Length: 108
Image (cartoon, rainbow, N blue to C red; front, side, top):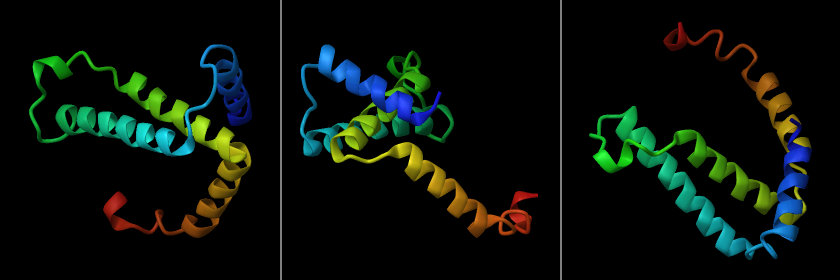
């Protein structure tokens, strides 16, 4: 699915179910909170911290989807075309890193 379609889907949901967007500062705080929840799962499930019993049922995919949802909200609110931005970023990274990662002995 294109990012543009995701942005439109979130915008439609906000307008029909969510009533309105939270302001940008609130959404930024929410994004930080959601990223923290992802970090908690990663640190405990894949890192060195022990996983609490209550954390074992947390769904990483669901938390990543929360991050994506709020990111899409922020993009919509600020008039950011994420598809264009993503395409530009991928082109930039490809040019910049074309040989860098191939020549990195740490990745072999």
